Amino acid sequence: MVLSLAEGEGRNAVFLALQGYSVIAVDPSQVDLNKARKLAEEKGVILEFIHADLVDYDLGEKQWDGIVSIFCPLPSTIRKALYKKVMAGLKQNGVFLLEAYTPEQLKYGTGDDNSVDTMQSKTL
Ligand SMILES: C[S@@+](CC[C@H](N)C(=O)[O-])C[C@H]1O[C@@H](n2cnc3c(N)ncnc32)[C@H](O)[C@@H]1O
Image (cartoon, rainbow, N blue to C red; front, side, top):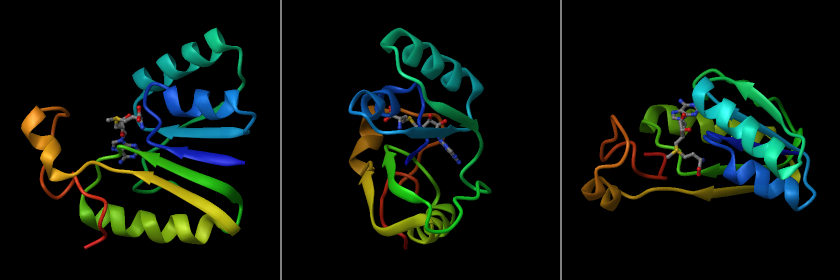
């Protein structure tokens, strides 16, 4: 079972489902989740969607084969706490796949409230 964090409009979760993974996708935006549901329908895959904020989402313990985080801009304090939850939530030999922004992204003006602090993958 794979958990996709900050799933947005569904491209990553749908891709994983098309590879045969069982996927649960989390995002705090209902608008994005609706788009993700539509994409999953169009592609003929079944996913579980959870409307939640990673600030207080409980990832549980040793229950995920994989956790995926692609371009999730989070303040360092929240990011640090999340990474701890990710490590606790993975099964033994589970995989955390992280693709993160760098502050370089700021020059493109994407996102609403992004800052040097949020556009990183480091915990400190
Ligand atoms: C740039 S989009 C990336 C979406 C998707 N991961 C992708 O690669 O297409 C950033 C996503 O992070 C989500 N996000 C931002 N803050 C979040 C938080 N505190 N908890 C969960 N998701 C969050 C947003 O709702 C948005 O869908």
